[in-house]
Amino acid sequence: MDRVNRFHTKETWLWVRAEHVGAVLVLSTMAALHARELDWGRFAAAFVLIDLVGYVPGAIAFSRAGGRPISPVYHHLYNFTHNYLTAAVAVAVWAAAIGHCEWAMLALPIHLSGDRGIFGNTYKPVSLPFEPADPRGQ
Image 1 (tube, rainbow, N blue to C red):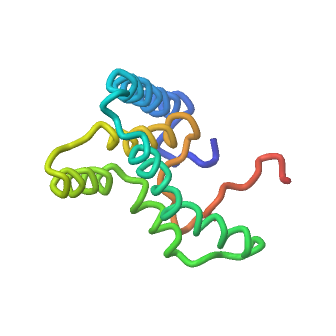
Image 2 (cartoon, rainbow, N blue to C red; image 1 turned 90 degrees about the vertical axis):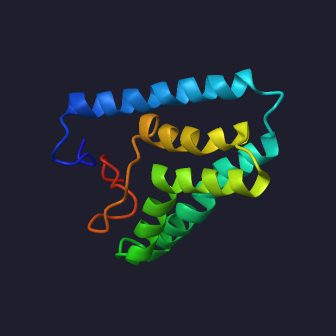
Image 3 (cartoon, rainbow, N blue to C red; image 1 turned 45 degrees about the vertical axis):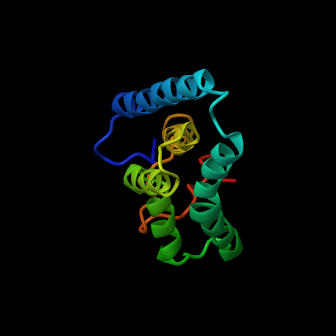
């Protein structure tokens, strides 16, 4: 619970997570219902690209830092790539580039809601370590 800001109680944080799990279920159902129309390669690329650009560099820097602070740029990059406004712009640009919106772009909100609902990940404040401390002290 220490990762949750002071405005959430345990109960409200569970509601936030449940809401995102619900979104994952609805969006995944939509993808499954349109599986034949969905370009799975593009879906996978869109799904993975968020973490390749926004999470992996920060995770590597955090690991290499050995407990020392890392550059705030990694937090900002994560927050930029893991937000719905950026995802909406990416989908709009993609739709404009190909002339229509395609089902594969459901990967973006599925990824974001999965991070929030399943893993409890939200934005990464620069004032906190890039990765949360292990509550067991390990």
